Amino acid sequence: MTENLQRSPLHEDHLALGARLVPFAGWEMPVQYAGLMAEHHAVRQNVGVFDISHMGQLIVSGPGAEAFLNHALTNDISRLAPGQGHYTLLLNENGGIIDDLIAYRTDPNTFLLIVNAARITEDWTQLTSLHAQQPDTEPLVELANLSPACAGLAIQGPKSRAVFATLFGPDATYPEKNTVISSDTPEDLMWLCGTGYTGEDGFEFFMPATTASDWFQRIVAAVQAEGGLPCGLGARDTLRLEMGYPLNGNDLSPDHTPLQAGLGFFVALNKRAFVGQPALLHEKTAGLTRKLIGFRMTGTAPPPRPHYPVLSAEGQPLGEICSGTLSPTLQYGIGMAYLPPTHTTPGTPLQIEIRGKTYPAEVTKKPFHRPHS
Amino acid sequence: MSTVLNHLRYRPSHEWIEPGKSPAAVGITDHAQAELTDIVFVDLPAIGRQVKAGDPIAVVESVKAASDIYAPVSGEIVGVNEALNGNPGLINTDPFTEGWIFQIAPSNPTEPDTLLDAEAYRAHIA
Image 1 (spheres, rainbow over the protein chains, first blue to last red):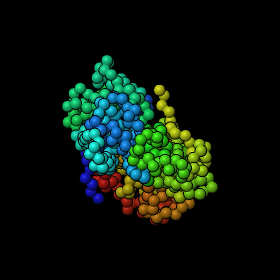
Image 2 (image 1 turned 135 degrees about the horizontal axis):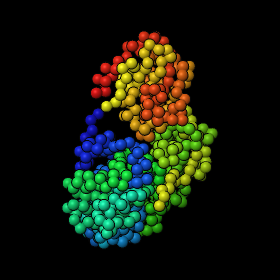
Image 3 (image 1 turned 90 degrees about the vertical axis):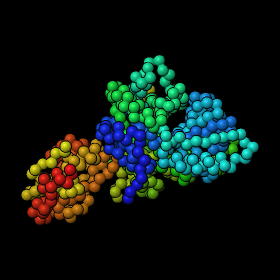
Image 4 (image 1 turned 30 degrees about the vertical axis):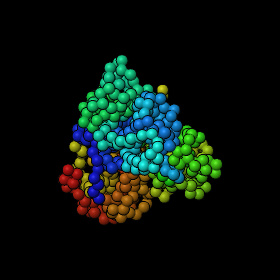
């Protein structure tokens, strides 16, 4: 099978660093450089830099942008002051998850949406379709997809602030958690965002694809000077799973609602009408039929992986793993699965079926790991 | 450059076996361990199991993937490396000695000689 994989603007840099490249969400991206374990520990202990150029950047602007997005997305975007951002979800009419994303208000009438690579097309289709349904009497809203021209880098780990100071000087304003700083020189650097996907302190930033290689080389040097490493998608996955962060495609899909996924905190159910709201209100009244739980292996076992069957202690099939791995920090297997409400209390014994054998596990609270702060 | 030992025989799927011995130790090559990266779990075969050449009989797991290990020859599994249960990383640090996976008594003592020799295996991974 041949696939037309997109390449990051950092492709040559990755090859020069000895990266192993794999297909991911239609992109050819580094899964690891030095090794997944070393990269994982580098982020927990020092700092790492990830290429996130595959992620999408959509701009929604105009006097009607706030009202439009408050109808399209689950969180209450009117709460964001300029410079602030939050986690939110884009749903279909059934309350199913099209995408999870971060929305930033970069100025009073402009919003930046950072979306998943594999969902850029679906997001764009949904937003443009909602836009087309708007009556002409609504205030003006403009949509733009900047993804093809944008590159992105994530710096994550307890030494992220030291890397930031190396890059921008000791007096530069650090993008604190859930804030965005728009650059004065967008031809070089576009946005600095206080977000990440590892549970550690850190920031993500987005720049024109044309300047990405230069930034990356400077950042890799700054990261290495702090005892850190360039990191691939392998470590990104184990780091996010230790925090219990869902991954779109594995843990989130149009078959699941944010309530089932435990993301109710990011749904402003009682704001004005939004897409999926009636379905969620109905589900809340009727009660959840399944819920995304965390589990851990309680004995010696192979690493749990997606699609392995999850059974009750008595051997009754309950569901299947959506994300699973050996936790490099905890040194035991962890994962997530959608289970019926009878099997969601922490401590509930489970079994995981791996290659025809069953191994003991138990429901456990998320996050699986809490970084020192 | 990965190490290939001259006295061993190789299956193209990256298992090595000691020729001219019964029981013969079997493991995976230095090239294979480097490709798999940090090995975190090994599913060992049952002792006494009769296997045919090419049967998947063990599983070596890194964080990212589970990889089948195939019987390089037909025979009976007569030993397994229990040390891998506590320290699967032995396959990474010492794939040809401490990191052996199982021992097989070949049904046909000359079958290992039909596998790739070191020179052919080097060409295979080049």
